Image (cartoon, rainbow, N blue to C red; front, side, top):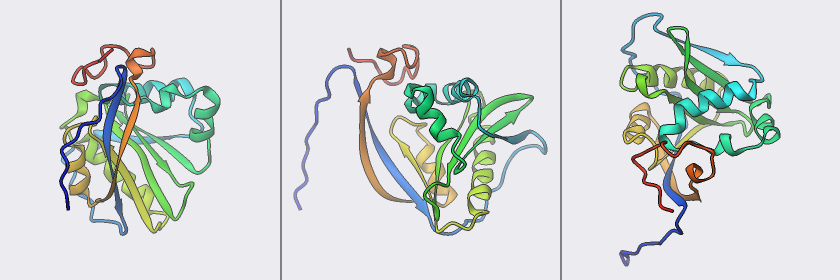
Length: 199
């Protein structure tokens, strides 16, 4: 085995992330939720209005450079979030939409938790664990063979640890390269300041 120490130079205006793909093959014991009864709730968005969907997606993901759904045109986005095999759920906290959960059943018996996240003000307050437990209940309620999720190096620095503690196991890695969405008006130039813009 030869260990290589190489770098791949990206053109200016691009971002890259290492993506870790994770899976589980049996429903795990749900981890304890340190929240007050009634503090959080979820509601399903049936055929969500695209503007409403994009707004909560942006509020949750802007700090981590989530942009894929924001860059889609209306028809492409509608084809996903209005598909009967895709469920979109919203985390509610004190009367506000503060998190998003998207679960994809289109390749059943594989189920993918496509997006799961909460707004920055709820990080570290039990909202993520509450939402993950609901995600696992929804996904495993249909008795799939496998549930998958992925995270990347642009995500919250403890996201991978969170998924491992939940019971997911990594099975592959990939590298994602994309144009920086902040340079094309998809996200604000102030989004994700921890990732410098290189023009």
